[in-house]
Length: 172
Image (cartoon, rainbow, N blue to C red):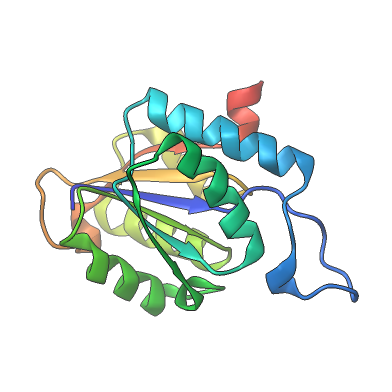
């Protein structure tokens, strides 16, 4: 694997007592943001060939929009990514790394933000502005783009932050 896209699901309805967290759906802005992010990833040439997506409704709905752009991308939907922490995220990436060139992980905070900051801390960044933004927060619909110099196994120290995309920045 040479490139890794760490992406949070798009904007969802708020949690309340009448709905399970796993069943929360995207709001209209979330649908629009997911389409916007897919368009931008394609525009800059970051097309995933494999995606690992959390089984939660909001991540599956986000993926549905991305999949309309990345039609040849392989897909694994897994409960293991639902609210996953660092050990689970690292394990999932390591398992998928040998089978793809560009991997997309689509999940949830706080795990994704922690994972992206771990990669940033271990490997550094090619883009100072992106590293500052990533350090601050990982909003819904955001994607952190990491790349290694060579196609290799997944070790965090090899994957430098290239950019950090947020729907809010793209639409303004």
